[in-house]
Image (cartoon, rainbow, N blue to C red; front, side, top):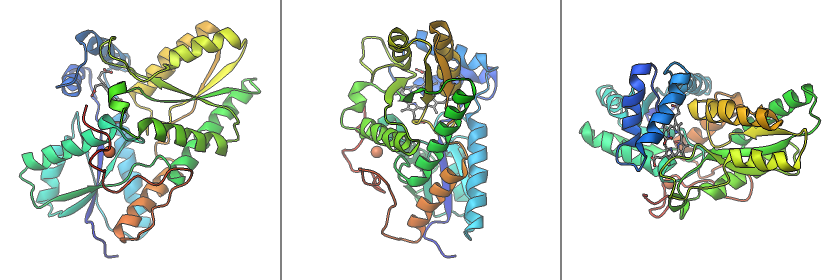
Length: 335
Ligand SMILES: CC1=C(CCC(=O)O)c2cc3nc(cc4[nH]c(cc5[nH]c(cc1n2)c(C)c5CCC(=O)O)c(CCC(=O)O)c4C)C(CCC(=O)O)=C3C
Ligand SMILES: [Fe+2]
C-alpha cells in the first residue's frame, strides 16, 4: 500500500539497564533542569532497588514489535525504529541509521499520554536537535497525536481497571476507591498546557466505561526543589486522608498518565504507596498500564493509518477534540 511516510519512529524517555548506567542516565535527565542533587541520589536508589535495570527499554522493544506486527497485519510495509531522549538507543543514533537506510519522512510516536512541556514539546525539541546533530536535513519527522481520548487507549485502560477491580473483589473488597495518577509537573509547566484537562477527561472516560460513579485524581513522582509548587494532591496524601475516613477500605490506583509499568510506576506506586497503604490498613490494588494491550496497539495503528491515508477524520471520544497533528505554537510552553 502506498503511504506518505516511509517509517515510524517510536520516541521514548529511556532508562538504564545496569547499575553503572544509573547515575549517567540521571545526569542526562537532570541536564539543564532544576533538580536538587539529593533528589537525584534518592531516585538512584529507586533504580538500584531493581538492580539498576529499568524495564522501560524492554517495554519499548515490545511495543515496537507489536506495532510492526499490527501494521504488517493491516498490509503496511513500514519499518518501526525506536530511540530515546535520555539513554541508549539515543535519538541521534537512530536518526543516523534512518538516514543511512534512506528514510525521507517519518511519523514519530511519542510515548506520552497527556501534553505538557516535559511530555510533549521537549520530545519534539530533542528530535529537532538530534536531526540537526546528524545533519539530517532531508529527513522530515512529524508526530502522531497523543492518545489520551482515542477509543483504543480508553478501552485498554478500562480493561486494566476492571482487571484490578476483579483482583480486589477476589481479595474480599466488594468496593474500592478509584484513584487515577499521572506524573506531577511544576504548576508553572501546567499553566497553559492541556495536561490537567486531558488527565481529567481520560480518567472520566475510563471510570465511566468501567462502571464507576466516583473517582479521584492524584499526582505522583514529584521532583524539583521543595519550594517550587507542583501539581497536587500527591497519591501518598490521598492515602493518608482516606485512612482517616474509611476504615478497612481499599484503593485501586490506576496510573493512566503512563504507557508502561516502568520505574516510576513500580517504585513510586508498588513499593512506596503500597507500603504506606499497608501501614494505614488500606487494601492496595494497582491497575496495569496499557503496555501492549491489543486495543491500545490497534488504536495507535488506527491513528497512524489516519495519517498515512491523509484522511481528514481523527477518531476521539468524549468532550475534547483529538490533539492536533501539529502542536499549536502556544501549546505546552517551555518551562
Ligand atoms: C510528565 C512526565 C512523564 C510522563 C510522560 C513521559 O513519559 O514523558 C514522565 C515520565 C518518566 N519519567 C521518568 C524518569 C524520571 N523523570 C524525572 C524527572 C521529571 N519528570 C517529569 C515529568 C514527567 N516524567 C518532570 C517535570 C521532571 C523534573 C525534571 C524536568 O523538568 O525535566 C527524573 C529525574 C529524577 C526525579 O527528579 O525524579 C527521572 C529519573 C521515566 C523513566 C522511568 C524508568 O526509567 O523506568 C518516565 C517514563
Ligand atoms: Fe504540545
